[in-house]
Length: 510
Ligand SMILES: *[C@@H]1O[C@H](CO)[C@@H](O)[C@H](O)[C@H]1NC(C)=O
Ligand SMILES: *[C@@H]1O[C@H](CO)[C@@H](O)[C@H](O)[C@H]1NC(C)=O
Ligand SMILES: *[C@@H]1O[C@H](CO)[C@@H](O)[C@H](O)[C@H]1NC(C)=O
Ligand SMILES: CC(=O)N[C@H]1CO[C@H](CO)[C@@H](O)[C@@H]1O
Image (cartoon, rainbow, N blue to C red):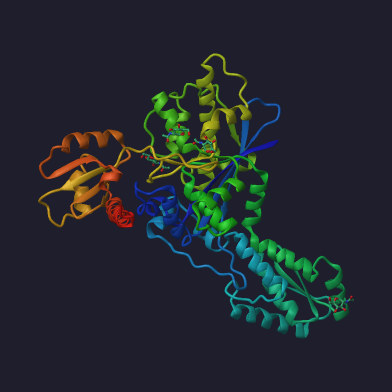
């Protein structure tokens, strides 16, 4: 079995629509990045879905998908603690799709980024850690009290169970107990923490021989505190193609939560992501292109894209890749789970394979498609590799393997308003709303820039308003209209005049 590609989907407590409300078509990718970076830090990832597609050896063009949901909760340990925001609309959205809050809040897998890991490591190695929020100090006191009371009456070799303490907290409880009581030993079992009364000699022996030595412990604690991040690092090491649908926000979150805090420099961010995941494919752009060409029915979300590709509209429906669910993920065979992260990830990976097949079919014509396999698919996808879709920004996508494409959006229009004192951007927006939804930005008191991503709309507005008596729309020419440029020209003017004067004065008299 060979792991082919992973398709991760992050579920956030902030829905993408909201985050995008402060973006504008005027934004360059770097501006878009800086705006988004700030909001990313406030939110936590509550669920991550991963679907791993592997080709089956000996079976041509057949793939098995292993899909997993991970519920995540930020690590709280020692000095490490997090605050995060809930956005009401996101909670509503999650409610609608039956999100399991208990799994997230009570059993979420911890995670941390490399910077936090460094801090914690130092804390643990220097023994400088404190019990804090994870298990309340009061609760620890209760546990110690319970154990000491039992210890008074217990004989050597007796043991008791502290039920219900699991995972990462179990380490903390054991550390505290072992530190406080020299004649006990603790082990972690499924049913909870087992406390055993032992002689001091035996305790020493255990301490120095078992893999429960302090150093070993520290490793274990660190491992469980790192939680999902361990898995993330494995994902990075695997260097498999990473697939997403409109994945830009997901990439920012992956960087911030599991790698490092997002850098200030946009270029550094791009470089980091490229080093982590050298092959990124965003199905959004690929499907957009194919849809237009093959006249597929309009779609508005990933499930619909998947449905169309599985329908008779798809000419390669029967010849395309065969995708099955792994035996442990059969839940998805019969039922759709829209917006469950792993299900979305599965959709995304399937869409990629099917679209890649279409691309191949397009190149070779119907009859003579070569025996398809994943490397051939990757070849067909080559123009889309590392091109990630960007919503509502000055460019439609980001090139993670090099400099971004210069903007190819329709030209900026400039509106000159007459006889409408005090007009606001809002009012201008409403004025044109029926014709085109412009992004409006004020340039001067009576001039506004209008931006749209549709060439057609720009043209029709230009035509209609070119000779309008009070609202004149024309093409914006940076050199002519920009107040900054005008200012520079004026300064240049002054400098020129001076230079001229100096020249006249400096000229030796004849
Ligand atoms: C076990 O290690 C501790 C500290 O590392 C030491 O104080 C103790 O003497 C050792 N005991 C034995 C039996 O080696
Ligand atoms: C996808 O969009 C269609 C039409 O807008 C809608 O009926 C459907 O519920 C959406 N599905 C998901 C999973 O959002
Ligand atoms: C992305 O950048 C690389 C490196 O400069 C370049 O070779 C590639 O053509 C670019 N891709 C697109 C689609 O612009
Ligand atoms: C709609 C869209 O953005 N299409 C682009 C997808 O990517 C290819 C290759 O990079 C471009 O040529 C398309 O313009």
